[in-house]
Image (cartoon, rainbow, N blue to C red):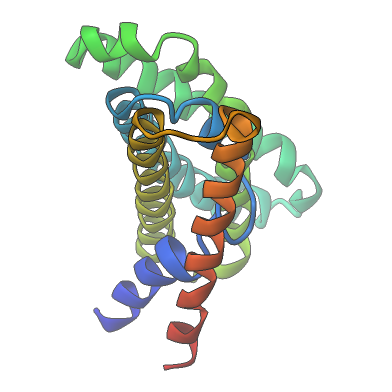
Length: 193
């Protein structure tokens, strides 16, 4: 049980895919304008990350390794991620039509999110069991959602402040994201405990 908690903390904070490994920056910067949209995208991406982690682990261990087809790993994982995105899109359409309309174009774009592919590839190398793979995917999703919601909250507050003209818009967003990244680098000490 302790190992699973460490996997979650490592994936969400210590090795955060957005702020430490710099994967998934496009949705991080593009979908963080409003808190509602960011929270919805975080939930959808979280579901895709967790599903893709489990499915890619199973494909790798049950199909690619036994048949010595490891060289097809990238292609297989892209197909797995596409299937996970389709499942998430269908689930959102039926479970929450409002969220489905709110996210709109961002749902198919999750398939091109390099953080999802990065999690799948790292999972195939690091996880020893299906449970670890799912927990790793959930931890990565938790970290992605956390930084996405934090940045969107900060961006909403920054809009209300008097920011000098040269820093308005993208520059202040990049400065804020950089400061968040520095803060997350502070979690590296947890890996040594």
